[in-house]
Image 1 (tube, helix red, strand yellow):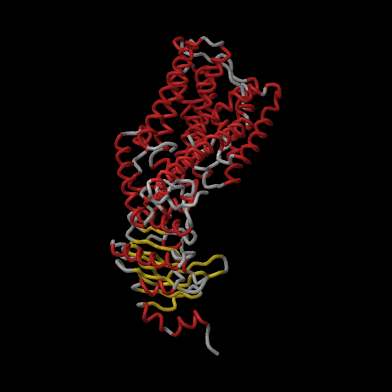
Image 2: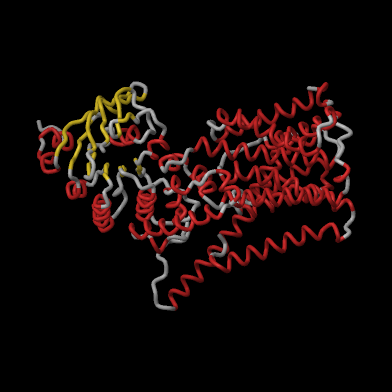
Length: 252
Length: 335
């Protein structure tokens, strides 16, 4: 029940974004992926979720290779994600966004949908109730009928999380969820992520906000220039000499 | 949705019933034949535009080959009937199947393209079909077209044929309404809004785009078959690239991605050329002009803008009500 990244290398032309990265995302905990800008964190996200095929190496989900599957297949296996800049369906309502997250459980086959069978109507009704539940979970219950594009940025990030949760993932990958949030919003985000973990969802977090990372993570992986620099519990990583150098630069 | 809950359902049911009654009563209103012909063309064009709406309005993938599919349906149905004596229902069925099959085969590679490249590829497909009608003279009769298309005796009656067209159009409308009001339609809109995010939510974008493309081709082909048997004569002129352009322009003006937009767009396709007959061949130019004005002032088209306006008013009244009862209005910013 874990995602194993095995010697993953990803190059773009002559640029090596990831170089032989090996790590394991253990179930039931919050793992954070940190590192300076350009360290390869988002690239690793994209490799795990099927958006980029790795140049070499493997990604295994419960021992099964998933690195050559397209994104929608990876999602179907229970790996859901958010994006660095909230990618919402802006012209849809907040509720409809969450319903797309439930796509796999609500898609009822072409013929049944075309004929508008009562079964589809019942599924839709149940789906809407469930979607409301996810919206209330992230605190957006009152915005259900607003257009997603009209939400302020902080709420867009919450909506993206509700949408991802609605796909009932086993693994949730959050790409810089605190970016652009104020202190108050960041604090409540930390609580939300912890509650997601308590629901039994494994969280992989890319984040620059170090106090958030150190607060909620159970395990931290540090990347630098596409290589894994260190990993371990937050306390250990924080005092690792190499990590401090990578972040603060070497002392002369 | 413009109105929600019971009021909305009642309003929509009442509107639908009224429209159905008007359509059913039309042949008995004793309008002149010219007007009946216009109504027939309205039903046929509605089928094409509703199909275009699925692939372009909902799924967001431009297709400039709809006139070509329309023509392919018309030629398939009429040539089968004229040259081989195939019966009307089978000819019509072949008119649907042939373009749908072509879309199914070409859809996978073509729909990998996006934006301008997709537009160009579908222009190519439409042109190819048009040129086949023009150049493959042994089969199609070339620029002169196909003569002597015959309806079965029972449908050789303008009123019955009118009912056939409009029954088909209404069924097409129901099909589109059903598909767009469940997970299918949401998947299409999600792909239009952000294909990456849709894929991350488990939506197989390639599959849904292909289904929309096949449906759009099949509906255009059905319209083509109905058109051939209505007119009893077809020629390549009716299926040229400019017609595809007019269809797309009307879809945008009417409101792409809304069912009402397809209806308004259809009325524009039929009525505008009639109203601008003074401009003769320049009516496409008038279309272009209207398109520019609409895009400038109502980027969501007529129906899309109206719907947004009503939704906005609803939100405002709801907020006012909440203020009046002392509860906090929704804190969201309005766009």
